[in-house]
Amino acid sequence: MKTLVWVEHDNQSLKDATLAVVTAAAKVGEVHLLVAGKGVDGVASQAAAIEGVGKVHVADDAAYEHFLAENVAPLIVSLMGSHDAVLFPATTTGKNIAPRVAAALDVMQISDILSVEGADTFTRPIYAGNAIATVQTSDKKLVITVRGTAFAKAAATGGSGTVEAVSGEGDKGLSTFAGAEIAKSERPELTSAKVIVSGGRALGSQEQFHALIDPLADKLGAAVGASRAAVDAGYAPNDYQVGQTGKIVAPEVYVAIGISGAIQHLAGMKDSKTIIAINKDEDAPIFQVADIGLVGDLFKIVPELTEKL
Ligand code: FAD
Image (cartoon, rainbow, N blue to C red; front, side, top):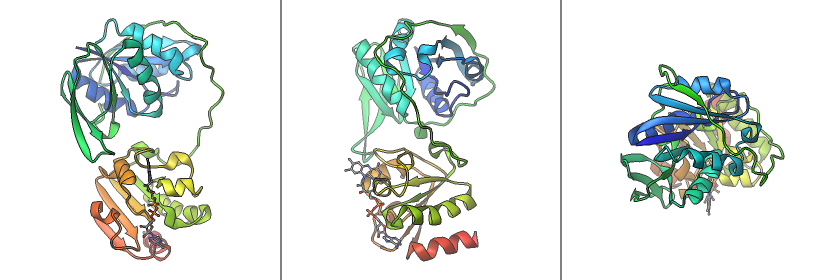
């Protein structure tokens, strides 16, 4: 089988999310990549260097600069004549484009796969990760999104893919790019961070969230996350949210501070290697998944921990 992997990038550099998808695609068949964007020569070179990659299709066009699904989906559909499967990372961009491609091909999308059991058989989480479904498809063309934390990253160097220019239908005139507000942070990106410090509703205010969580994260070189309750209360920005309706993470260390451990939060972080929970309620559900638990008042424990570190 020939697979096509959507390369996630910002027109300048390739994003790590792509590497796990390459690993998944290699289990399905031969790996080709698609780099669509504007001025993407650099990204194409990085893509060709990924280990195990055969061909890199490059569509360089202003219409693809912002990855609008309305413009990109027809390009992918046109490449599906010579590919059996297309795989996307289950990121905001991937999840925006994949359904449109699936609809255009009149096939069922297979979402958020955790493993490849065979060329037509995959596992995926259901009920917020409380059960794993094995799904088998009889569709001739496969449209798949991949949960990045479930696959090892392919090596970013060592490959020697060939680069080939392709063109699509350009701007379909169905949507326009209005603008993007990209949060700039010196911290590691949440989904690829090795250590994450997350705060919950118990922090009580935006000021206290930053006063307690940020110094600890700084000491650990960690990314900062939050529960939905903390985000909804305005203590932390939206893009910090971890969970079923936020980001799915699996760092080496996840520190949950003043987070109860609701099922929807656990859905986003329970695959973390080591989970450390700080909560004043010893019966809080977070302790059921925690490797290390500190029972006590976070306003006392966290500054003490930060200082000792
Ligand atoms: P709480 O549940 O209020 O927990 C606060 C915790 O802090 C408690 O355990 C308490 O004992 C502890 N605490 C209080 N004071 C202190 C103190 N001084 N010191 C130490 N500990 C203290 N939630 C997410 O996080 N992510 C999601 O993606 C998400 N998606 C959802 C999707 C749907 C469809 C629904 C219905 C809900 C979703 N939720 C999600 C919400 C989820 O159900 C919980 O409401 C939320 O996770 C609770 O956040 P919390 O743990 O910060 O707050």
